[in-house]
Image 1 (cartoon, one colour):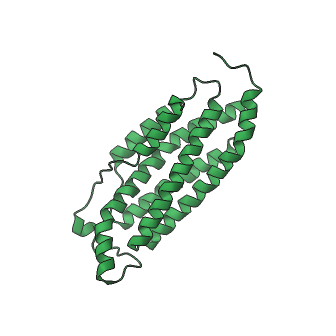
Image 2 (cartoon, rainbow, N blue to C red):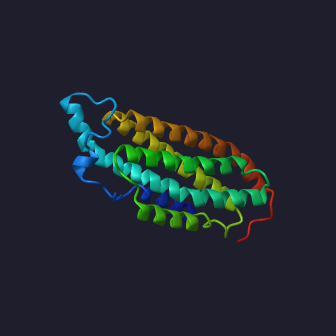
Image 3 (cartoon, one colour):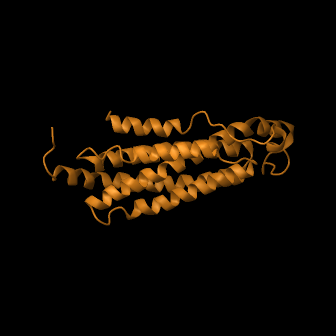
Length: 212
């Protein structure tokens, strides 16, 4: 695998590891202010309390992931427009969607009486800015960018499916719905990226001969 792609995929995976939340006391985080919408009975309530910290940690990871993707998408959209003017309009629209995704995930955390880890989000953003430029030394950067973006979209699809399932099983219907909204946007973007690959490959193949 190309080193730049391996770096990026590792970065997406790292966004989902070892989150540290600035938590309120556990009894406040799992208490009555925002009870799960569909939990009923003692067993369901206990399951929600036990599962709450893990769901919150996963959501914090998702928030950092979205923040880290914004500079990557911006850089790749600039690269695409430089080579094929006007082609990156859907990507720029998805950048706006990505900001909305972060806000939705932040809302999910608020439902759990949590706040995102600002340190982790800042680090993720810096890493994203670096990764967004990792392919610029290559003549086929458009292909590398597209593969990197497609990999990240499918990673996000898996993440939001898992988050939706966790929220539903714990009885947080609003969180499940917010994650589902993000999931649909990611699926739409993944489909668009797949459709662009043949044209991007053709553009690279008809450009100047590859350097050795």
